[in-house]
Image (cartoon, rainbow, N blue to C red; front, side, top):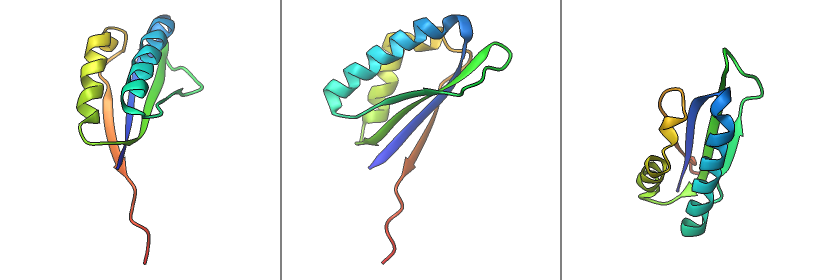
Length: 96
């Protein structure tokens, strides 16, 4: 299984609108896939920008594509300052 980390920046004036869209998107994805998403942000802003991160732990195959389609449908890029950057991590196997 894999974990997805998506980070991006948002202008402070778009933060409230973006949060509503992301939380709605995450609720739909959680209901449909059973994933437990998280939404985080850095505590400080820089030059009027906040850095946000969406975390999707323990996702199955095809989830990244499902998430990308849902983000497009929700119009998230219209409220971000630049693109959404996706990182995928997986657990290391335990030592024998």
